[in-house]
Amino acid sequence: TQLLEQSPQFLSIQEGENLTVYCNSSSVFSSLQWYRQEPGEGPVLLVTVVTGGEVKKLKRLTFQFGDARKDSSLHITAAQPGDTGLYLCAGDGSSNTGKLIFGQGTTLQVKP
Amino acid sequence: SAVISQKPSRDICQRGTSLTIQCQVDSQVTMMFWYRQQPGQSLTLIATANQGSEATYESGFVIDKFPISRPNLTFSTLTVSNMSPEDSSIYLCSVDGVLGVYGYTFGSGTRLTVV
Image 1: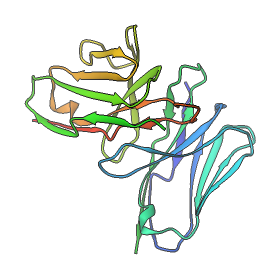
Image 2: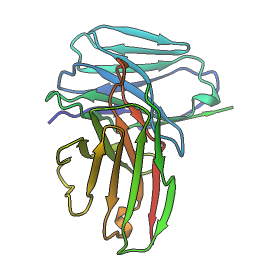
Image 3: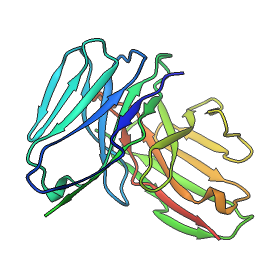
């Protein structure tokens, strides 16, 4: 069974601080996706990483896919209150069924 | 990416009753997925709905409790049957990448409270 361990589960920081969220597995994934969810809304896709070692940047967010495609990280620079939300990593299951395997989620609160 | 309309957005239901959640997509998609989520927690896949075939249910979810319809490539429903307070949760539909967009699009969710 493929599992994704996401950490930390909760993070409360001050505006302007940096943070990193980790997503780890013992299994190889063909791709990993990162989502952000706000209360009352569904998750919104931030990025998909496909190639081992890949780094993608989205403004202040930097996403990295491990060389072995078993782990990923999300780094936020100079966090803003608008970054507050639930961050979820998700991987494509190995059975090519189209199903996503989700990590446990990281609830981020950025205080002004 | 696809646009998903999910309704109702929330409902409060009596135990023992059933609620049907609708999910409409603005483009044709092969697979639609139904998830359950406790507030602030991760998503658990209930089933995969394919047009023209029976839905495929994940471990712990059964068709009698969560019947799914998929009459065409743009629409699906999930029914939560014979509800109990334990069914109180957020239910979300999702579709896989459309038009080459590699990623999933989610509906805004249905927040269900069973009393």
